[in-house]
Amino acid sequence: MTTRRDFRFLVLGLGGIGSGAAYWLSRRFGADVIGLEQFELGHVRGESQDHSRIIRLSYHAPVYVELAKRAYESWAALESDAGERVVLETGGLDLGPRVSAISLETYARAMETCDVPFERLDAREIMRRWPQWKLTDDIDGLFQPRSGIAMAAKANAAHQRIAREHGATLRDRTAVSSIRHIGGEYEVVTDRGVFRAGGLAIAAGPWSNAALSNFGTRLPLEVTKEQVTYFEPPALASFAPERFPVWIWMDDPSFYGFPAFGEAAVKVAQDAGGKPVDPDLRDFEPDPENLARVRGFLERYLPSALGPIRYTKTCLYTLTPDRDFVIDRIPGHPMAAVAIGAGHAFKFASVIGRVLSELIADGSTISDIGAFSLTRPILALADPPRTYMV
Image (cartoon, rainbow, N blue to C red; front, side):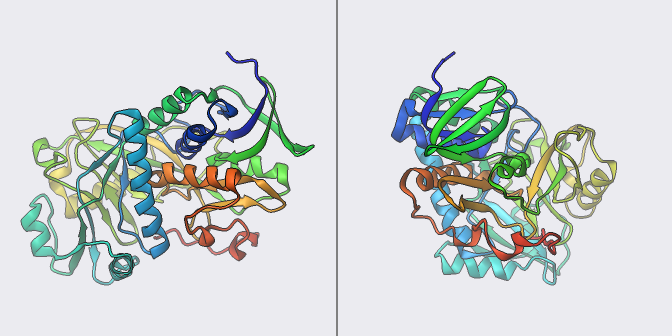
């Protein structure tokens, strides 16, 4: 265990985004990087662990589509360094009623603006390609062939392993109690001693406000307990990744799912279907009402996915009121930056970590992050309107 206490850069939080930041900083600054995690590495108390997350170029606004393009590049760089695959392209299907809470046309326009190829499919064509679906004629879809699976737990471990190979120090089970800016450095007090660094990247997920309170900032975040369920369909082979895409149901409630990956089962969940919780006090018990909604959706539209439940697993979302990310330097602190993923960031974890590294090392980033400002008006409201359907 290193006894070094002074570093050039410190990353607070080593979930998906923080591990990405530690990796990208280590590529440039090697042993001058330290990452701190309050729990054990790979813990399941936050947002970033499981076999899979959806990755896609299909998004509702061009700023996300362009960031997604750079996300694919960033994951490819990690794959090259790590010598292993962390992204599996299966194709992705966005589908839903023609009149719905989430407009497919908005996604289509954003992809067209960013020159991303996709196909428009009606219900008949969707069922011809994937007869697992049972759809009515009022349902349409968009298919984007590069969508697929970001291998969450595997990608986190790869970020951490290669960061260490580049010389970075990663310390888990190290809880932060305070942060002070003293003499041009950030003094980070933990239960395992005091660390100092000239630059600070905060990727604390559900504990973001606790970290930001050291800078006199509090955001109107809502932390919710979400869950995913693995079902064992009778015809499991028909859900193999080469035969079935990742998918998102574009309506309220919104659902999403995966082919069989990581388990001999398919994973299905409701997006933003959980209840608010305190991340330090929440339990890990599944919500039967949430599960009933997922089961009801499958019974109606994807009955071939139903089967015995292998398990239901909980996680957390850290939601901004507009469901947009926070990726920004902290006002008055040009060498400190923060990222909050708003419950849909794992696909971007490597590139957001990369952007954080650029912000604190270079003072700017080539990525367009204007929409993700820490000081945008809605984040200044004590009780803002909340819109989670994106």
